[in-house]
Length: 508
Image 1 (cartoon, rainbow, N blue to C red):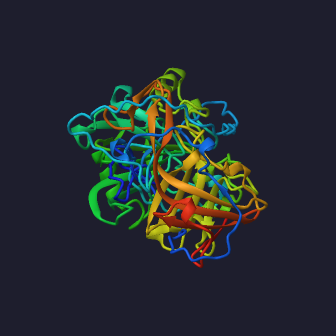
Image 2: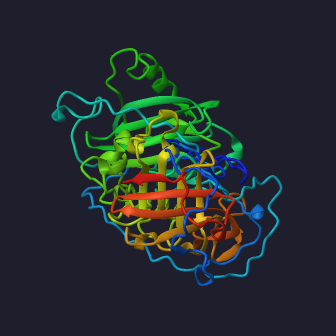
Image 3: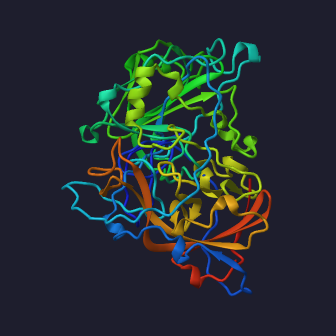
């Protein structure tokens, strides 16, 4: 799952490297689904509509989107796996009821020379420029559960981590689970560690093992997941600490030479037998620079409750087993990492599973596209759709779709409603007006975005939608686990009367 840092202007498709896709230097990461394509509106009989653009529901107005600064993660972002003993049961923090943003007086300040600027366009994202990273192949299964599901693993249960994957002084900030970025249409299952200084280039900062384990999956990536274009090599690494508890890194810009030499003997099992590579806590495994590091932790004894049909995510088996890494770090390391985390809402690590059976909120897949896996491995996200809370400011809703005029996009919703938790099969047709959005420091509103001069650890980070309406999404639930959706780029709610023959059917 990839994510790399790269800013794009609103007119361009944003790609992130979080294992997702777009933002100012952020992370590197993920992948797709066939979604609602924009169509010319015909004139079917008008349908009763619940509009999200009522004045009383509108969030604070903001100045021109051209001034908004955004950091985009790249697919293949930061992944860390933490497991203290005993392992706390996952707790589902309720999503706060979305409320209108306060309307602070916004003073736009000139950006420093050389600052990369982007606007939240069709594809805004939560992390500094993440790049989509291809998912790893299904983990190697052993002949019997007792021998372990991952090559070379032993034992079961979580472990306590020994240290942070990066030195604390090398980390500018952390982005939580649950971001949306480009090909990461559904909430991302890894975090992003943003390096202290992106300008220093690749291979500047050390990445070290957080605990003893076995590298059971190690694979290079030489192309950009979103565009298919060649790029400098980066590495994905999956580490089994036991046969049920693993951690993940992605977007590593260079491997430690001895590890690469060992991998080269069989290309990680592609040309000969492979039983993983044993590593020790604190061992140097690679380096990162000029982009975010993906980090995630997965406990295969835990299944997240917020996925209505967990089997739909079998393409990425680890996803439904994602756990909060912070409880597994030593207290001093945990506290230091939490001070770097931009998200202040609980859970601090973020949240990725938002499905509520019978309600609009959560993830959807276009019918006939093989759920999360999609029908085209190189663009699996094309049929994905998600209506979920913002990762940094969960009071605000995001509309994320795999195919909006041909590309994956993420939007704010004008007026921040109607609340998708209240949309059911009994609800009338819903019109969402789609907008750019940005994060800003509520304690100092002139600082916005994830780039230079933007938000930073310790800020009270909020998000706001910008004024420009970029398009309209029509949504109607047709059953407890089915819905109809159509997007109309360049239209406003007043210009759209109802569905056309281009509407798409989705399911859980």
